[in-house]
Length: 263
Length: 235
Image (cartoon, rainbow over all chains, first blue to last red; front, side, top):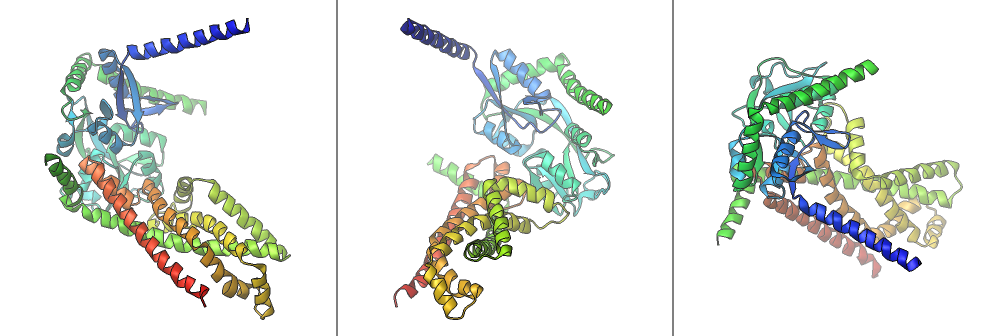
C-alpha cells in the first residue's frame, strides 16, 4: 500500500513538472533591460517594476506573443547589455545621440523629453537653467545618461566637476547635503524626485536642452526593430503613450495626495 | 587579421581616443592614495587594539579590561558587516558636508575596516611569542609598554608578515568598492570609459592589469622586507 502511494506521488510530481516545462516552452521570453530609478518611465512599485516604458514593452511582448522578462540594472549596464546582445532590447528613457547610434540601433522616437536643473531649495548654487550658469559648478549626473554626455562636452558647459552617479537617489542625497551644486536630469523623473525630496526644487526657466527617447536594440537586429517600430506606431496612433504617461504621473499624484490626507 | 584589427581599434578607443588614458592615471592616483593611507590607518589601529587586548589578559587593570571589551566590540562590528555598508554609512551620515575629501572618506572607511582584521592578525602574532620573552624584558628593567615596543612587537610582526601581506592585498582590491559613491578611483574610471565606448572589455582588462601590477609590486616589496627581517634569524 505504501509503495503504491509513493508511486502515485512520484507520478503526480512528474506530471506537474512536465506540465510546467510544457507551459514554459509555449511562450518564448522577451528579455528587456531597464533601470528602475527613473519615474514615471520605470520605477519600483512594491517589488514590481512599472512605468510608461514597461507598459510599452508589455505592448510589444503582447504583440509578439512573448512573455516579458525585465532585468533591472544600472543605466550604463543596460546600454551595454543591449549592445552585447544579452537582452532583446533596452527601454530606459534612452536618448539618441551619434555615439550611441554607432554602438546600437534605435527604434522610432516615442516620447519627447526636456532636461532640467535640480537644485537645493534652501541653498540654490545655480541661478538659472543655462549653460553659463553651470560654469565652475559641481554638476551631478547619472553615468552614461544623455545629460552626462551633454555636460561632459566643453562646447555645452564648463562645470568645475562632473560627478557621475549610478542612481539618481544617491545624487539627490548628495545635493541635499550640498556636496554637489545641481543635478541635470529629465523633466518628469526630476518632478518625481522633487516630490519625494521636498528639500530640492527644479529651476524655473527654459529647459537646458531637449531630447527624444527611443528603444535600443543590438546593432543589426532589424527584425526586432521592425516589430518595435510597428508597435510604437500603433501606440502613437491610438494615443496610448500619452495615456500611459498620464496614468503613471496621475497615480503618483493621487498617491501623494492620499498620503497627505492620511497624515 | 580583421579580428586583431578590431581588438586594436577597441583598445585604441578605450585608451588614446579623447585622451582616455588620462582617466586611468587619475583613477590610479586615487586608488593608490586611498590604499596607502588606509593601510597606515589600519596598521596603527590594529597594533593598538591588539596590544590592548593582549595586555588586558596579562594584567588585572580594570581600565584595560573595559578598553579590551570596547576593542572586541569594534572588531566584531567591523568584521561582521560588509565594507560597502560601512562605506555608505560613513559617506551619508558622517562625512555628509560639502567638500568632504573623498580620499579622506576612503581612508577612514577602509582603514577602520582593515584595522579590525589587522588587530586579529597582530593579536595572533603577539600571542605566538613565548611568555619568557616578556619576562626577560621585564627583568631587564623595561616597563610593559617598552617590552611590547622593543621585544614583543618586532618578533610578532616578523611572524605575521605573510598574513599582513594578504590583508594589504585584499585591502587594495577592496578599495574598488568606493566607486559606488562616485569617487573617481581606478574602477570608476574603467566604468566611465565603458559608458562612453560601449565596449566593456578593454577598460576592465586595463583596470585588471593595473590592479595586478600594484599587487605584484607590493608582494615584491613585502618579500624584500621579509628577507631583511629574516637576517636576524641567523646570527
